[in-house]
Amino acid sequence: MLSERIQSLENALKQGDKAELEALKAIAKSIEGDEARASELALLSPESFEDVLKELAGRKNIAQLVQISGLTLDKEKRKILKSFLHRLRSAGVEIPEKVEAKKVVAGQKMLSEWAMATPAMLLSGQQVGYYFLGGRTANVFLVSHFDLEQGIVNFRNFHGSEKRARRVAQQTVVTDDFTVPVISIPGEHFFRLLAAGLSKTRNNEIKSELRSGLSRLKIELSVPGEKSHPGFEPQELEKLRGDRSRLYQSDRLLEHPYFKHWEFDPETIDACSKELEDASHSPLQLSESQFLERMERIFLKFCLSGLDKNRQRIRSGLLENAYLMRLGQDADLAQTAIALALSLEEKTEPADFFRKILIRSFPEAWKKLGQKSSSLIISAR
Image (cartoon, rainbow, N blue to C red; front, side):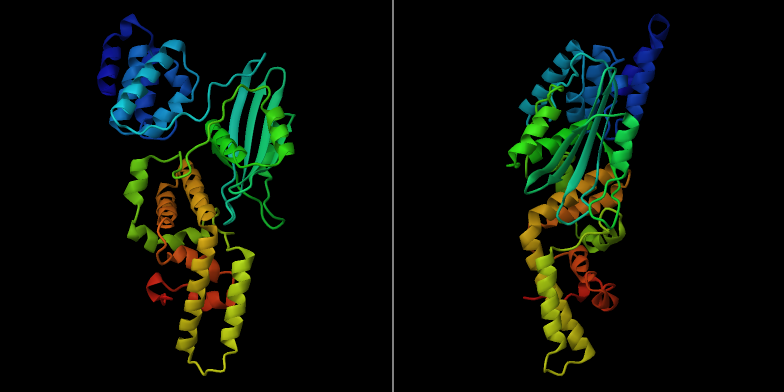
C-alpha cells in the first residue's frame, strides 16, 4: 500500500516537492516500530497520510495509531484520522482513546520538549517521572513521584534551564544506596502516569501543586484502564499469556538493572526469616537434603503470601518495566516480563523469578538454593 504511494510520488517527482517522498520513505522504514514521526507526518499530503493509517491498520500496529492521535495535526489530517479511527472501532477493532489532548503553551513558541521516567526499581512499583517544556519566555519542568496505591506521593513544578532539568533527572535516587536510571519516554506516557496517579491521590496540597504546574498547559488527563498496559496491544498480551517457556526462563530478569533491587515487603521477609530460624533449631534430626526441602517449602509458602499481598503492584511494575525495556530495544526480556505479569492473574505456583527474589534476601540460603531451577521446587500443596 505504501509502496504504491511511494511509486506514485516518484513518478510525479518532477512536478512536485521531494520532501514528501523522503518523509514517506522514512515512515515506511520505521512503520514496524513504536514511534510516530510527527515531523515527517507533517510533510505528507492528505492522501499519503491516509495511506499511512491504512498501512498501520493492516499491520495491526494499533499502538502507533494511538500515538498519532495524540500528535498535533493540521485540521484536514485530524479530520481524516477521526473518520478512520471511527471506521475501525465500528468494525470491532479495539482502539484506546488518546490519553493526552491537544497541548499548547500560552503565549510562547515551544523550543524543546522531552519526558523521562525511572523504571519500577523496587517491587513496590514506585517511579519518578519528568516532563520538560522549553519556550522563548519561560520553561516548565514537572517532576512527579508515583505510587500505585497512593497515587502521586510528591509533585514539583521547577523553573530553570534545560541543562539543569536533565541533571536533576539523571541524579534520581530511590534510596541512599543506589542511583536510578532514567529512560526517555513519549510525553503522552508521562501524562498517562500523571492521570493514573492523580485519580488515586488524596493529598490536597499535592493536587494544588499539580494544578499550578499544569496551569500554563492546556491538557486533559484521561485515566488509562486498569486491566492492561496502554503501551501494549491486546493481541500482544494474549500471545504471551501462559507462555511456559518464558516463565521457565524468567530468572534471567534478576540481574537486569530494572529488577536488581527488587525484594519482597519487610513483613514477608521477617516472617520468612523467623520460620527459617525455627527450622534450623528443630529438634528433629534432618539430613542435608531434608533440610533443603524444608527450606524450599518455607520459601514457597512466603513467596505465595508475598505475591498475594502485592500482586497488583508487582503486575503493574512488570508491565511498566517491560514497556521501558521495549523502548530501550530490549524486546526479548520485555516479553518475558509481560508473560510474568500476566501469570499473576492466575494464582498458580510462582515462577522462578518470584521465588528467587525472596531467596536472595537470605545470602546463605542463596548459596544453596539460588541456582536451582523451578523443577526442584517442592510444592506446598
